[in-house]
Image (cartoon, rainbow, N blue to C red; front, side):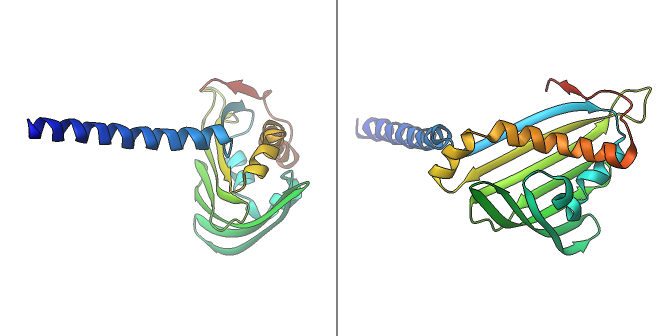
Length: 191
């Protein structure tokens, strides 16, 4: 009988533990602190062309909306660290980003020391586009960030979608400046 009661007690404690874990996760999601976006597009530029634009972190200040500063502080093959400043009134954040690259395939960036963000991660994956056109590719883009402050999180709800849209479009527009008109109009794809 005593073993049976202990087993029931353990199940209750486990359920309570799982409930608390789920509840904490739900509170974080409901608080709106975590923002995530995933998008997929077929574009009229080659994998190499769009990779070159996305990997050009040093020039982000020239074409990425809200990027005020982008200075490389360390660089080696397929990896760099950059000091970045992003700002959209009334918020400004400076942080170091560690960027890993696989030429023509992937660019991944992680914020390592932000004051405003708990985390900020971007991932660009480039894959072949149309079989009969090497000047096309598919971009899979994901963005995940979480503000440290609930106030900043709520403020971001007002403009998150617009910022992501502008940021995504900025890279394609920069590719057009560098390489000319795309061979086809950008098509948003389902994931």
